[in-house]
Length: 179
Image 1 (cartoon, rainbow, N blue to C red):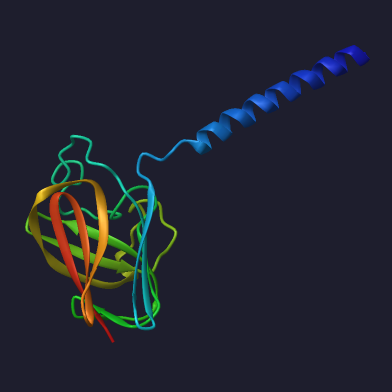
Image 2: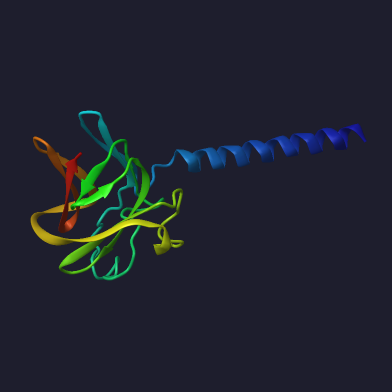
């Protein structure tokens, strides 16, 4: 009986070790759409955007991978979140300090920009428009440069900034005014 128990314990230990090693290796693999954070500081106001960067990978992005007229998480994996520590104006709309989910609705000639109060979402599957804080449209421009990974950046100016979303040859600019 003791020999059977020892064999069982050894077998259990081997299975546990193998399972742990397998999951540990999976956790260490880099994500195909890596996590990124961009920040902007102006006076006492700090703006931080956390998002995942999908890559073009020879795909047609807008109108295909991302259908026009549908809500997008503005990145990959978890929905993109923006934190603002002081009141600002985005495209003329006053935004109070807080953390919001940043959704977009891409279209051929404009994008709808949405700040939503529900946090911790995966994708845009549970997007609830009743929780929108603000919703506005900005024009789309085309770039000569191809952005392989989806990129969010800030262009800081004297008393303002521009939040820029770029992917493939598409660029969307959102003016920011500090209050």
